[in-house]
Length: 487
Length: 77
Image: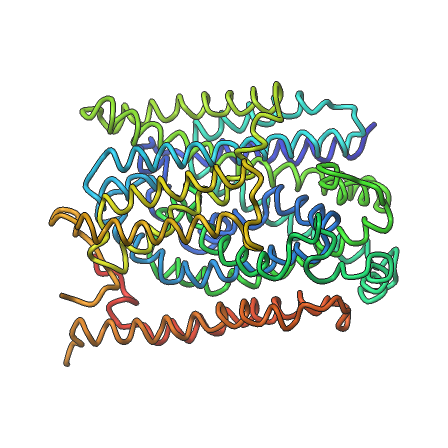
């Protein structure tokens, strides 16, 4: 019997049951389905808000990034806490506005704030284009995890089909509640496994954390700082600072993270979360140690194989039961964000593309039906891409974080500055997204020693301001400038 | 009771933001000075600098929360 496989399968099975059970006994309207009726405080809001911290990308990726690059990985440690500083001021007025106006998606904010369904549809398209590859990445991560912990007995395609077929069905049924409740299990398992693996493995091989770090510094001088072992030393101080700044601004700009905010019961609950979530971030340090330990214990991984640094080391140094636990935790780290992402993408399509552009008279029930169908469509599309041509999304993926961050100037300026206009926002978004695609796909990242997405963000902000000055907001646009002085 | 006018509210808001953004600015501004590949008691120096400010964020946000104008603390829809 393959113990790791059994444990991983049981964990995924429990999560699927939780996902379906999250529906409860009520009949769901679209507000229940997409933002859980705006009732979350405490635990569920916490795990939803923390959803971004522990995905497969951070869980396996953090160890892999430390393995591949050394010190540049420390950006992952810093940006979350700084994102909460921003969210402390940014999210409460957004939440109030969303509640007042019945918003369900990120693009709804653009439609409502700038009085144009076309602006909303543009935001929906940009959101879907960048968030779907991020979902596909989670799928591929799950496939890799299951194949590795079962030593190839379950193929990656089988694992993806089973896990994400079920995920699509529970999102179809329970909506955001499924993502929230499965998050509880996911976060509990991740914290436990990070503590077990992150402490046990470095101690087992090096005696102490200091022993590990000294060994790394000896074998790879400079690896505990930037630029570490990044290619050509390209990830230096300027890159680190601009990347932390960029990612802290982009954190809540992912359509699913933005939307999860609407599920809060009150803005007080949002602020309380922002205040305490930074503590949650510190654990990531342990994942870097696992990556560093793997660098010395299982050397020679190259390219995307560095993502296996954690799993390879766990298989080598831990009993099979722990390997199964890590496999299950890793699988949930893929399933939960994928659920939230698919939900956000399908609601954007249902509301901001189908209803706003194609059938303005559609009833909420019909928008819910269409959104649900798109849960299945988006998941099927992601599965097809992940299985048939995993290389296809590589480029879009590189740009995902840089891309969604381009929403930031529009969102912040519309809160701070009354004159922020539709023309300015559209021009800024087009310039920002265009620059991201051009710079990142064209291989100009980093640019001038800084994260290319950051350069695009600055250009975007300048264009948004200039455009708003040249083509002023009309009276109908001026519905909100929460923090702007009166006048 | 005197309700503060919009300008007083904006001033309070500004003060709260300044407090909250102290760790944001200091963490990033300090990075160039702590970028040495050394082990500082089991934590890389650069990571230690970042972690210190990560765990100070809650303290600054708690203080910023106390400084918020009253209307901002409650949800007036």
